Image (cartoon, rainbow, N blue to C red):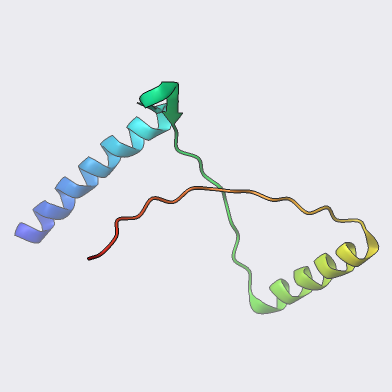
Length: 79
């Protein structure tokens, strides 16, 4: 039962953190740290291959434009 209670506690803490970042957390220097999300899709292999073929053709034909995005990831080092 102890593990179940720990999981429930962690879930409650995660919800509080998610809510805080959804609305933004103020950081020094007037910065605001906010949560952003992006949806990805996973396809069956035959669909994925067809999509990749269409993408390659559009890139060769100049009908596709590259988009670049950047994100930051903060990790804790292990010593």
